[in-house]
Length: 215
Ligand code: AP5
Image: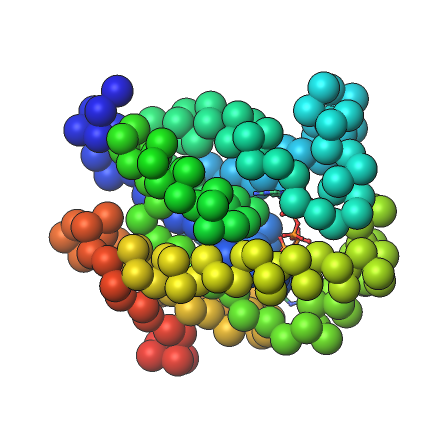
């Protein structure tokens, strides 16, 4: 498959944000709004763990400690769903990439397949609010106070540098995620609609927009 053979108007969106910033919540809403597929690396990993698959057994301890799962496992797990979603309108990817290395590996593979990310959406939320949300949710072993603190530290060290990476390559949409869910969704959707009107979104590097402009 070449870049030309990919679905011509597939929308390819990526969510970046700390644990609890609302990536999953907003990815669901965006997927419904644009009729595309929500792919969540964390949900897929938790399903593997619940089903007791080989991947699940390999990653369970890592996920429960709030560490990052090895890149090769994640890339293998996501390849098929990403390519399938690209053929059916596009995707909103939540939880991947988590590091610049993952982004570079994805860029190399996805670029030639025509399934590369067009727009990254960043949700900024203060740390106290992240912790409050995750403790209230208490999803499992990784939503305890110590592990939450560690996950936020991992985000700051390994994932936040992605913002710089995407700002220089794709359109980066900056959103204040510390507001009611519907308000955050509205802000994202308005900016995405605007971005998708641009003639060739994928070929429009070095742009950043912020919801301050639409608030
Ligand atoms: P993952 O499942 O991706 O977890 P996370 O990034 O820590 O994010 P969360 O799901 O906790 O939060 P979220 O930002 O999606 O917020 P949500 O919408 O759920 O990853 C889990 C683990 O898997 C990782 O730690 C790692 O081990 C591994 N992993 C995953 N991907 C990997 C990768 N690429 N490489 C390596 N390892 C990987 O909302 C959270 C809560 O807040 C909910 O209760 C929600 O209702 C509430 N909420 C949301 N928005 C609002 C709002 N605006 N106001 C009030 N409450 C809100």
